Figure 1 (cartoon, rainbow over the protein chains, first blue to last red):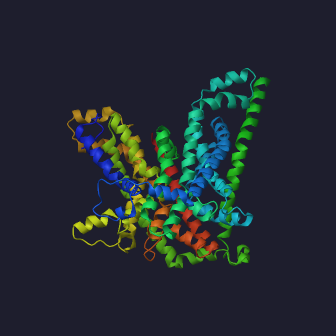
Figure 2 (cartoon, each protein chain N blue to C red):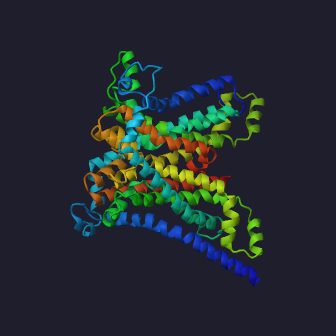
Figure 3 (cartoon, one colour):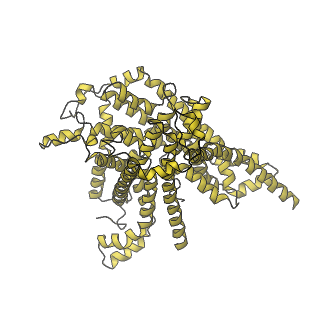
Length: 275
Length: 299
């Protein structure tokens, strides 16, 4: 049925792709439609194909403590992204221009920190935070998220720096500019799209975290993913609200993913391709 | 000559300055916790008993307890089943999907992005999605079954189906990853190969088995291993769908370590469970690196 031979899409193949897409995305669409239904409507079977959508679920969610959790998620993801970029971008540049022997070992070590199961970091972080009073704070979350975003920045930015022709830098150096000036004024502007893509991926990884936030926060710094689950456990089975909460948590992810469509592939398979 | 030397020295100083902050931070937030984990795994540390955190009287006590702990042994077995079926289904279905979408057309290129949605969703949202599907009163599956006059048991609280329910959700979430990798591999196959085979009278199936498959086998293995490494992280699904139950049917090692540390307060013992898990992950990672090297050597 398939093969590398016929590259242009036949009508039959397009239909097959369409059907597969609908089947695969149906669980996702099910959540979405539920978020616009009242609880009575949710329990109604067979599900009505046409119904008057309500925004009540979203509205009541926004009036609850969920709004604050959403703010916590935004803050911890943004700050950790900024911190990881600030530290990681110069490091990635140095690594990309460095022909030293430790380069591959260092790259592998950086990769390993990304592969370790989160529980390995959670126990030490939990005890340490308990000791110095960082439990249930946004600062604490920012530090943890930086621990997995920094390796990502270093991994993702290196190829971008490698595309900058060294001759450009050499010319500036000959004219007497310092490496710092060359980096800030010549190289950085050239990799700006790469920085934007990396920033969005960092934001997404931090935003998507559930495990760290579950253990390291209680009420003050609770993030949106934890708030949705909490909602499920303590405020009964209000399915409409749960679906609306889930939809709100995934909204920024879907918007950003579309924005970085081109870089998404290299970021999601980071390491996989280069390993 | 000396001018060049000066530039080099300046460059080296810059490199050091640029790398140092990252290395220090990585040391503090990754290496120190790792050391702490190893050290604590050698103690019987319990939160209720602070003095036990520095009790090194019986270094390997935790590790000696592991083989005799039925819950730990069971968790490894559950993890093995989850990983095996999850990875197998993801590689197989991801490959089929990639073959289906390996074609040139603007519409299809846009569709590819939509196929990635399950993978980019926050894992907890994936868990919520499947929770809504697996809950009897509101799930479409149970309604469909009732139309066929079949009473379906609640999947996530059934001993027979709970793990399968998680495997299905995990496969749905991660199939796009193998799809993406296989698609990239398919695009590197030179077209002349299959054209030549067509001229020689080969049919599509033969082309697939003799040309396409050998080409993509390495990427199938590598993406499978990457999924294998990540499959130990399947926390949100277990947490939200089954809570490790019924009994401990879906209690994977990661979840058991979590319960030990944060429900039973057995920090030291939980650290030793985590270390065993880490060693397994590192072993697979080294396997991936080794395979990558071998591939490079062959190419």
